[in-house]
Length: 309
Image (cartoon, rainbow, N blue to C red; front, side, top):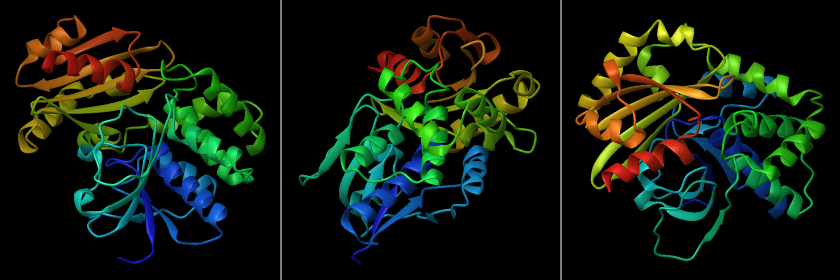
């Protein structure tokens, strides 16, 4: 192994995982006065991530498709099912994550976790703890990630501390109106005209293994559901295709209407009754709008897990 340590997020990278890798690499290199930490990505970038990287003039991190024999810090995930191939053969140095813990490793390592709305909120705390200055561009990128992951503070995963972190990062980044800035990010995030149905589903997609059954859950947040509803049949066909070709029991896409605080669900499943049971609704024509559900981590994945256990 080389002395290079790659900091990488989950497959189907979202803004928090990419900016988490970049900002934590910057932090670790500053803290240890070195250059051995390198940010990496685990797949293609979505639109808002490309936008933010261009906005702050950051290079796209190196793409890693196999972690075998590499030194790795896992950011924004700890489950091997969500990691890049080869994670079992990698040397894991550290984990920094805000999701539920499903992690086993043979050696003692640093494992940083807290019930916050974004991994970048944890990373912000590390900057503050060690009195390392957050430069304006880093602050803007981290602010963007926290706003997206907390759905501009509307997500049930958002804490009072996240709100304080958002305000501090906005101040450091010179953003006067962070609510409006966050809304603009979501307009970019939900611009789907140029994307194929599979690209929409996979833009923020995570794998879960429940009792030996694989379930894939994708999420898109939007300020306007109409452009998605026009493509309902196309999206359902793509979900079914993913389920069959990638050997899932169920594949779920939920499109979150952040203004009205609910989500429109589309499903492909070997057992629709299980998905009906999970949410207490009837998925007529494989779709349903559910008021008040906007978080995959806190609301959707736990409901699905309950019916498979």
